[in-house]
Image 1: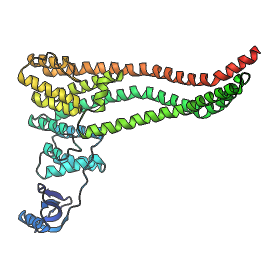
Image 2: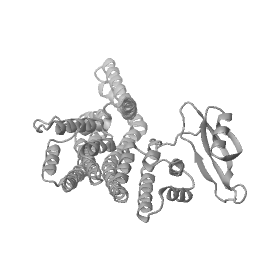
Image 3: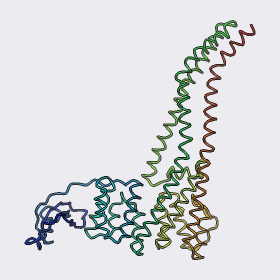
Image 4: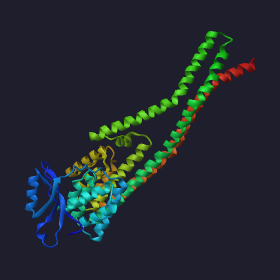
Length: 428
């Protein structure tokens, strides 16, 4: 009996149920009996048994297959690891199905292991690598599946996967730089906001009591009514200063919650994302984000072109890999303009600068599109890095000045009545 059972499956029928089976191969039953395990699609158990018998299998065990929860999208690091391992398998010349099973043995558990196991099972059932990935779109994006198919069609899968790995790492570096550029000013803002809250919660009530007493004493000589009015005014100021920092925190949290809700609604309806809005309209950080998206689009287009994909499909791959609705609309306009042979005068690009389509056309005419796209991607990447470096250089001192003015104004409003009272004592 074989130590490792193989897997046999039948293409799934949407109207049929799935039945898990364990069977012996009939031809080898007399000598070296081989166990086969897998799933088969059938309307009922009797039909499933009949299908297996027609496949010359002796059924040992047959039962309804347990419902499988769809695999969630794997993380970026795991995805890069899978891409690199797959490229190494192709370079080594190993059969992809066997190589993926070996990869599963090394991974053992986790989302990546589940996704690779499902792809390996589909390939054992006779599907190609790209077809198996397309069945599990939640784990493997459609753009990546299209790129794999292009590599298979052109017999250049290893080079295509290596190219995509370099592209993904470059995109990761740009995103990490943007996060780090925003993290330092935000950390400074959070620290100063905590200091402001500490002053409002502990310092303001104690100094406020002195300020209210001083306000009464400043007016007591004139009349009790004026003293009471001054004390009431100072009490209101102390109350506002006491709760103002916490109101600021509430506003920040409400804005973040609103942003999350708007993003969820936009994603569900495939409308404008907050990232696109920020890239187009947000001051300071917007230009850096826009250059990062354009650099990612140009580099993805380069990867697809170097995989010998035709230009319209390469443009579609670039748009889908970035995942920006604005860039997808720009790409659609670009494809239509190229198909109609029109000039790019008055380019109505939303995120794509007017120079990009013109440079692409120039690269096509000079038969140097790959080198042109590599240069274009590098240029926008350097612009993104430069504009990203400006964010902490401007935001950090700006936030420091803003919080210093807020804290200083708080102390001035609290100490002013006491200063007036002390001056009155000195003059008296």
